[in-house]
Structure formats: C-alpha cells, structure tokens
Length: 250
Image (cartoon, rainbow, N blue to C red; front, side, top):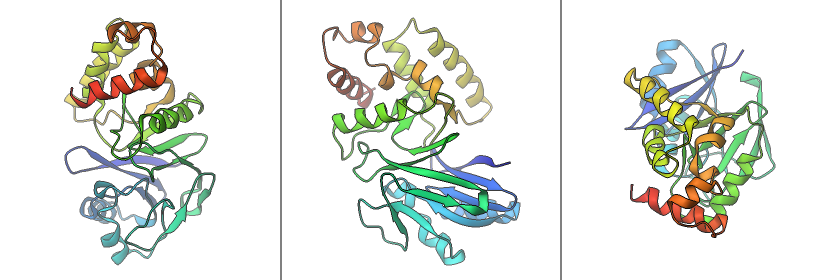
C-alpha cells in the first residue's frame, strides 16, 4: 500500500513523498537538502519528480536531486524549465510504475499561468491552487481563471484527499470564520487544526468534502458570506474577487 508523507521545507512548505516499498516520488522539491536527508535516513530510492508550477520554492531542489538521481521529471508544458523534463499538459496521464500510481493532469491557471495538478481517484496534488480553507494568491492569472480552476476541483469525488504545499490552514480558517461565524463545521475544523498544530502535526491532507464545507473560496454563494461582505446581489466571480482581496490584506 502506498504511503504519503510530507517533508517540511522553508517556513511553511511541504514536499510530498509518495512511497511504495523503498521507491519514492517527490512533489515540488523546492529544497533538495531535506529530501536527500530523508532518502538517506530511510534508505529510499527516488524514482521520479512531479512539478506543479515554476515558483522557486517548488523547483529549487530539482537540479541538485538530478545530480544524484537520474530520474524523470514531469513539469507543465506551459513554460520553459531550467532542467531536463517531460512536458505535460491538460489531459495527459503520468504513470509511475515504481509506486503503482497513475495521475491525470489538469491545467488549473490562476496562481500562475502554467499551474497543473496531478489527480487520480484518491489523491489530488494541487500545489498552490487550493489550500486548506483557502486558495493561492493570483500572481499571474485572473480571478476568472482561478475561480474556474477551483470549480473544476469542486467537481472531483468528495472523498478525494487534498495535498497542497503550504501550511496555511489555521490562518485561512481564522479568516474564514470572520466570513461565516455560524458555520459549525468551520468551528469544529478550527478546534481540530489548533490541536494538530500544537503537536506540530501537519493539518494536511484534507478532503474535498471538508473543503467544500469550510473553504470560503468554494462557498462564494453561501448567504452568510454574501451578507457579511454586503454583496447579496453580486455574481460569484464578483464575490470571489472580493474575498480574495480581503484575504490578501488579512
């Protein structure tokens, strides 16, 4: 059975590791040092690298890893990358025989224009598109692109496990509680995440069901949110844009 665990990096990044036996695949290795340390300590063998987008905190360790492991790297076809890789795009499939997993590629621009995610019937590795109770900042894409990307995620099976790459969940929940103070699921999630973080346990993965119940960026049309920001008659994209701007300054 596959095991998935995070390697913490920088202040709040997670480099996700998919392990089957001694074989592993890593997602968005922004820093090679902690990855190499884990591989050595656990006597694991790197078999592939998956990249979601071009930001340095997601790709900064790739070239160093490739110096020690001649493995395939999969990265978005929507821009150039400074290392050898297989360019992948919307609708492609990546098969990883060493860990007995296959992923479909979805192109989900918004945070960046090249952003892709890796999804199968159990797992979503979504980089910086969707966060625990939040979503990525719009560095390159438009609000329309990001909302459309989130709506596509929302159509996946509700049991899908969500693996994003930053530990922002508690701050996002505190922001969301201000928009939906009467959301019981949100209050329960806050209590749970506070307990986890006090023990230095990651708040991730979550599930899509949990995100739909508690993530304001997936709940723009909820009456309480609309009332709180005084946009009862606004469109979903107008509400999404307003919430994103509020979160930027939170």
